[in-house]
Amino acid sequence: MSQLLAGKTAIILGVANKWSIAYAIAESYRREGARLILTYQGERQKATVEDLGKDLGAAMVLNCDVTKEEELAATVAALSGEKLDVVVHSIAFANREDLSRPFLETSRDGYLLAQEVSAYSLVSVARAFAPLMTEGGSIMTLTYLGAVRVVQNYNVMGVAKAALEACVRYLANDLGAKNIRVNAISAGPIKTASARGIKDFSNVLDGVAAVAPLKRNTDPAEVGDTAVFLGSALGRGVTGNVIYVDAGFQVMGLATPE
Ligand code: NAP
Image 1 (cartoon, rainbow, N blue to C red):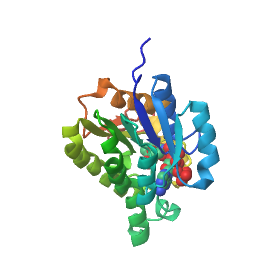
Image 2 (cartoon, rainbow, N blue to C red):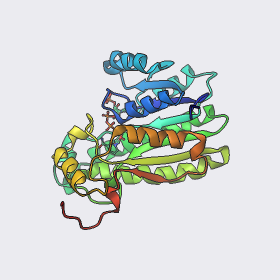
Image 3 (cartoon, rainbow, N blue to C red):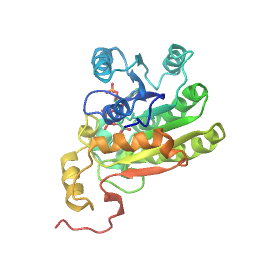
């Protein structure tokens, strides 16, 4: 069978471990024949992500803290001569205490930190890598329903995701003339290291599985396969969009578990 991403190079930011959504995306990309470049944040993660990169057959594994312009510039320099086709931004961070106490209590520093890592970084990543996308391509990020609805305890991250989704639309407009598409995948809740920072996250998983039209949670591989669609020629007409991969949960209004 032909592979949907054969001949394409994808840089994937946000693989921390095998449970990361970015790892599931990398697995789908590998299956579809993409050449993979992974990044990690800081020395602490280097060995782990290099090992994961070996498992995935990654061509390169690079250090890149997205809050540091000099590290983004060094990553671009390390990619000199490369043509990129796909950029996957699968990165977010907020202080743990801001994901448990009332949103009203969010500190200025906590608010700005969540915005910087989880929303602004898409802008700096797109600006850094777009010049390497010389034949056009696809940039995508990961978002969550808490951007558009109140989800208990998601708080400051919901506000950051709202900004992120707006960034997707403005970047899609800026980069469209270069045939670079920019989209977000809104994934249903998935048990990952980041998700464990949200208070009562297991209740969210149970609640979604009980009322979502598909009566189950989201499989990370489903997110990976949607990322393949967006990164491949199949997604060539889609930009500026948020695609929900959430077992249908976002269409539900008032719902009582059966
Ligand atoms: P994850 O495995 O913890 O991935 C988050 C990644 O962000 C980690 O690799 C982390 O690196 C990285 N990161 C944080 N700050 C960074 C920085 N300054 N520079 C570079 N990388 C940085 O959790 P995940 O759930 O897969 O999250 C991936 C994305 O999916 C996030 O945007 C998240 O909001 C989104 N999402 C998750 C869910 C869910 O339920 N899990 C649902 C919808 C959307 P370190 O580990 O080294 O800090």
